[in-house]
Length: 164
Image (cartoon, rainbow, N blue to C red):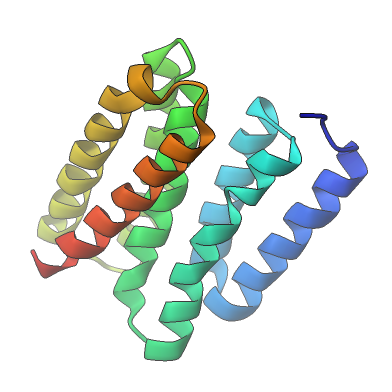
């Protein structure tokens, strides 16, 4: 599949960030910025960009319900997506990519005065989800549909973990 011109990539991603800023505020936007920077290093094909768009479902649910906890599944969607993309042949790169998104999330949560206990639970759940995602990479390598399914499953696991 062909790569798109860098200008088109920038316009699409700026629109993504503007939606995050307008509907979610700076925390959602910071996760989006981190994800876009990593995505730009890996793949700027239209199909790769399209994989980021479903994360906006969590933003829409947040806006319609007011449930701020939906920030976690949004984050884990992007962390899982980037972990898979970066792990292509090198699991440590996937750990670094997904871990960077989780680190930005935890820094934001700390700035929001989350307790140490809450941060610990969020870190533990995020690490477990990323471990499962990265364990699937040998099976899903080169299969967009499977990797998309794993990413969606990871974000639903994050959503289910909100009951903890």
